[in-house]
Length: 127
View 1 (cartoon, rainbow, N blue to C red):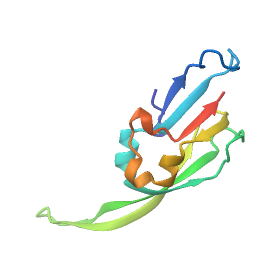
View 2: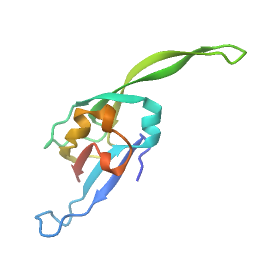
View 3: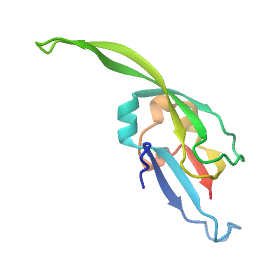
View 4: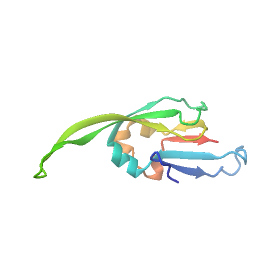
C-alpha cells in the first residue's frame, strides 16, 4: 500500500510460535519509487525517533538527506542549464505506531542500497 507522502507500507504476519499478540499489526515501511525519483540520491539517513519510541502521528521518524540536479535556467531554444541541489525529505507517518527496528544496512549506506523494493524497508512498526 502506498501513502500520499511517498512511502509504502507492507503488513507482516506474526511468525508462528511467537508471542505476538493477535491484535497487533506489524508493518514494514519504505520509500516508493516515485518519491525516490522526486527527491534524488539519498546520501545520509538521520534517525530522529529511536527504536522503542512511540511517536505521534505526523512526527518525523527519519530525515533523508539527498542531492541531485535541478533545472536552473532554460532559453527559447531549449538550452537547459542544470544546477546541483540538496535537501532533506522528512519521513513521516500519518498514524501513531511504536518503532520496533530500523533496517541498519540501509541506514548505514543508503546511497548504495536504498531502492523502493520491498527488501529495502527503512523501519518496522507495531500498531
